[in-house]
Image 1 (cartoon, helix red, strand yellow):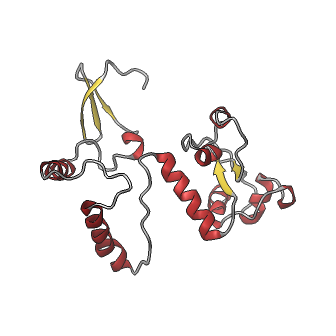
Image 2 (cartoon, one colour):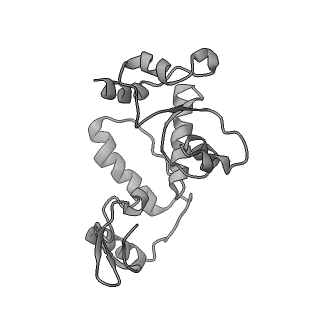
Image 3 (spheres, rainbow, N blue to C red):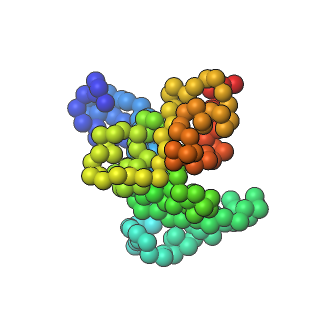
Length: 194
């Protein structure tokens, strides 16, 4: 972060405080892992209560009573009232794990192997996440080809067409190896053309 002074020693909600007292808004939010900000009062109280009761600090992929309680509450408060018949997947502790899981779910549920990735995205350094990462330097670090991803421009989306025509103008033809795009890919095309 350019221009910050010293190292940070305290955090509250969305504010980071440097040792010299300077305050900064934390737009990064722990790479989106701190949805409620740093040291949210309710989160702190729940964490302290859990640790004081000798709850597991980290269960990884183990089934725990805390995870079971979360799943029950999620089903009761979120899924059932909305009539949703969904499954919950616990991923590993990194964003790359979540990206890999999302790619696997998308491929399994659609039966398609190709993923559309937009420019300038960084998704992690596991093989699948690297394949979808926009920066060629990072992708090159894997030392092998990463397949199953078609790149689409995001910042400079053509403004001349919508829907499937946008796909054919931005990407190679199906004969060149491109598969039919998912409907979610058309939304940015429509937004830019609209």
